[in-house]
Length: 83
Image 1 (cartoon, helix red, strand yellow):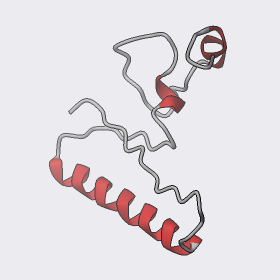
Image 2 (tube, one colour):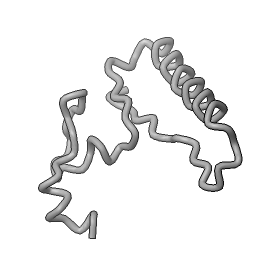
Image 3 (cartoon, helix red, strand yellow):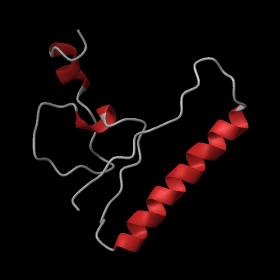
Image 4 (tube, helix red, strand yellow):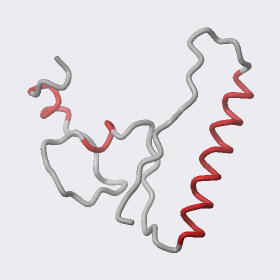
């Protein structure tokens, strides 16, 4: 496996669940994903981010992404993505 992005986050727009429960669910989910990758022996790097949009929007394709790779704000502002 070259890369994967865990990007889900439980969102409660009506705030019906306590913050502690939502936070615990996020932590448990992230740990489960990380343990699965560790056991797979095929994942070499993990980029943990809030959204794939934080690292993938730059107008380039087929890039290896890591902790130094972020979306290009100038590119985003000039593209149709934010319009």
